[in-house]
Amino acid sequence: MVRYLFVFLVALLLPELVMAADYENLGLTGTQRGIYTVLIFIIAYALVMTEEFTHLSKSKPVILAGGIIWAHAAILAQEAGVSTEDLHKAFEYNLKEYAELMLFLLVAMTYINAMAERNVFEALRSYLVRKQFGYRKLFLITGVTTFFLSSVADNLTSALLIGAVVSAVGSDNEKFLSMGFVNLVVAANAGGAFCPFGDITTLMVWQAEYAEFFDFFKLFIPSAVNYGVPAAIMYFALPDEQPKVTNEAPVQLKKGAITICVMFLATIAAAVSFKQMLHLPPFMGMMVGLSVLMLFGYYLKVNITVEGEKRFYLFDHVRNAEWDTLLFFFGVVFAVGGLGYIGYLELMSAAMYDTLGATTANILVGLISAVVDNIPVMFAVLNMNLDMDLYQWLLVTLTAGVGGSLLSVGSAAGVALMGQSNHKYTFFSHLKWTPAIAAGYIGSIVVHYMINA
Figure (cartoon, rainbow, N blue to C red):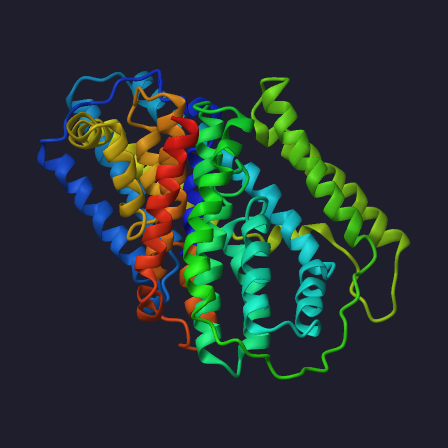
């Protein structure tokens, strides 16, 4: 579920997403056809939320919903006398947003896959397992590692990679395994909130130009509080014991592993430079980084051959990107964009932000993201044409990013780890620690107010 969330957030990422769209919505929310499109979206999203049981890929229902919603939006536009040119302008606005975000994410996914193939993450897992740390020390190490790793990789990847460590050393202790996974979910979501690359929601806000790149680092301390409060509470509830000894052999990095890691950091720097200095979309810098990886991949394939090792072929890693997630993002962007064109996002804006005020509404966004993917939630917020200052945009970035930790189903990391834990980490085992996580959620908001208001 987290991967799909990631895709949805990416669509909001485009610079053109600067809530000043050059088209007018139809304002036909009270029509029968308009209400029908909302029903279609609800049905599609219900199928998305039940993927764990139906095994129906999330991308399938939302792509269908996006097509149906835009078909009805086009009919409504014709009935309202809207010109074909204006209709295309609204449609192409969403297409442009999706294209830029999709290319950005595709490059990031390709780099992560290449690093995994070169044994970067497996070597880290092997090292932590062989060090034979106690349960409490391992709890802190895995949590802090996930917190910082998720600031450059998405929360799903971070949680799964470090989750393999927790599973390996905690297989004989169900309590540690359960609490360790709760710790990873909170750390992954909190770590992604203070860096534009850490979460799709932060990426979307950055690309929409509501905050500059370095503005997001003002959320570092609030994010650390969000993770640190529940981690401190759980730490003392852990068994102060030593896991059983393992004789696992060390994992060796493949040729070029370190170089690819350095290239990934350079690619991120290029994306920031294109945005900050050249005023071009960040995806262009990412594509330059992809081209460098392609050239280095050719070098590895031609010049480095190790007996028994498969040759490095970059397009294998492109092929293995989370395409279901990228297509889910396509469906979400167009489904939500179609509803916005009909006028529902403006209606939602009036109901939440005009009635409750920005602060209350932004805190509520975090609570909603504990149940509903934060990608569609943030996408809707970004398209509401809200007039908020930097403090409020950082607040909604924080709450949308960390609110998913309140429930195990609130983020992709939680859903993925439930599937990996063999029923040792469940919805109710996570719910047991929700009060502690809520304390961290409240604490992060208070600290954000004290520091950044």
